[in-house]
Image (cartoon, rainbow, N blue to C red; front, side, top):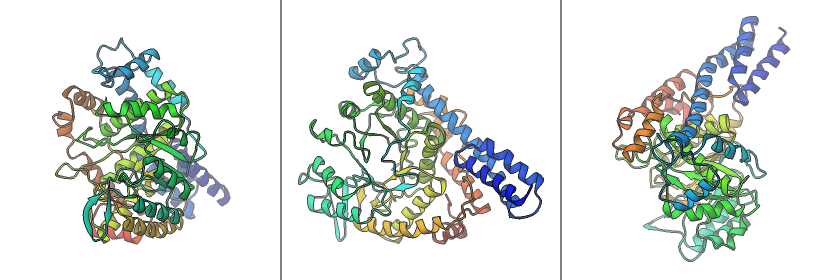
Length: 485
């Protein structure tokens, strides 16, 4: 094998990795190692081959999560029996499996779910591409310098935020409504200001729009309508009508699920993602039933808690679990995907809060995601938005984007070592039967599930540096013995 042929074969294997076909990449690396003894390529092939088994196993787990999510809907079901509107919609479509007597709730026919998934567009003109970071739509309060009173933003403050985001569009890939506002500005007026200032992908919630104002987003590829329907295997009563209106409107949909491990969902990483994925698939099924072909972005946003049980965006587990959710969609379903990261639990603008956000963004970028909300400006585990922190986050982004671009291009896909849970389905069924995860045996057996995953990732990161030039986020943490996601 000539040196040119060797390099061509190596590049071929890397392309298989880019399409997440690790089974096809593995024999190429093996062949190079077997037939070529000298030069840099066989060493690189050995390095990549060492990751192949981990990546193959990881992808198999994601395939199982997707299959099991469909089984959650078809074998366990969703608790919609008391919502007549949803029941009528699904019964008229012949989507409910009335023969599944073992289901805890209302089961759907598996083939109907899969048919609805087939209707979902996998691409759209407004796609900003992989590793897109931006603002997020959860923070209810604006964090002001030298002012500790918690208030929503007023019109003048919101206009300033909009101008600032527009000035930083070189690093902001999605302008998702960053903070709630008071009555000095309407939800529709907010959207109009965002439209005027930011040409890229934008997201808002249309629950406060009038029926006439809903037409504003229809047919626009650079807008998504963020909406939700399900939590804890049941519909939210106040969201059914707004969800159905959004689905029928013709706007692109961002289907949001913010389930938290051990609080509103299972404690093990696999079971948590299985439940979240099932709930988003249910939303997709309903949306495709009332409006076949409507664009649906998978907005599964898993959350983790700190010792006291509160949502923790300072946890190193937060970027890990969101990267895994993104991989289920990038590797398995092909659905456009939006997750969360880059925030912090700290409520004050200081070096540590900025550093935590930077580490989270770099962790997500390292593993490869699609669209990440809350990545700039969010603080206090999504309770606050700070314009000053947003500007600092943007400065850090410019620096880190340069470092990542300068990294070697032949490192391949980095394993996430996602932990398997053979009892994920049994755990979700137990949670359904007991009315929540807090009293479930499955929850108690998995209280250390994220910690064990952290230890595995930590160990692997010390053995192999994929981005050795990012000194402030990677090498510093390795030196101190901290978590390296």
